[in-house]
Length: 336
Image (tube, rainbow, N blue to C red):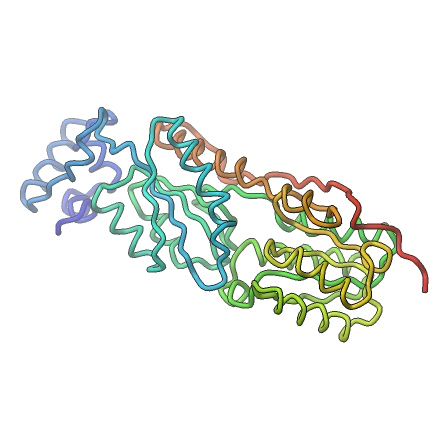
């Protein structure tokens, strides 16, 4: 199949110029348009019919990449996906959901077939293999997450590093001297998923700054896993009195496990979390937390992408500031 990049190479222009010349979305000089049309004719390039079905040559579809990898908690991902869909509809766009884990290839197929005008990408990794393609495509994109090297990309997310630092600073301010982070499953850390990396860094930086003893513990998604992690935490840190939980599924089981081990929250152990607000509020002991505003992040992602499609300037980075809400799960450390 002849691609738009092939036409661009033959005509000596950028892929975006080919798109503009063939769709009429932007003014192109007569000489450039002639070169593009000749190259397309010589190569037998045909634009996808879907791109001609709306004014301006657009499909009015946004692609949302939600790869369902090992360790991914699907309900947590849906907290982002559903607001993307509703916001897109409010902006007169439909959403094509991409759930297969096939790296850049799925995004390339969608772009080359003209199935979507732009791309929103979830589950961003620190060194994501999709980034070179996203930079090269003639389709705009927005990442929900901040990779290690975000240059040339548009990213939006909660400032997860600052969120972790807020939790640790809160515990340190209450007099806690030994803290632990309970994070997502080991596979998430092994992939160097961006949000997990940022939380671990913020936790470690803040603990070191406050002179606290600290450890990071991955945790799987069952109650049995939570019990094993709770036992290991207390075995490895007998003086542990403060915990930060960044694992939606493990939050309630961990609190239950600590209770079964004879620790009362918050009298013996203070617990904070980075999680959706409703999870923190509905826990048996309401949890001091930084809320993950998934609906707000999703709305930002769609609106940034729609602005890019309209040719409007957008910020490269939109990091939402964290807000810590104090509830019943944290208290001043009681000296032994």
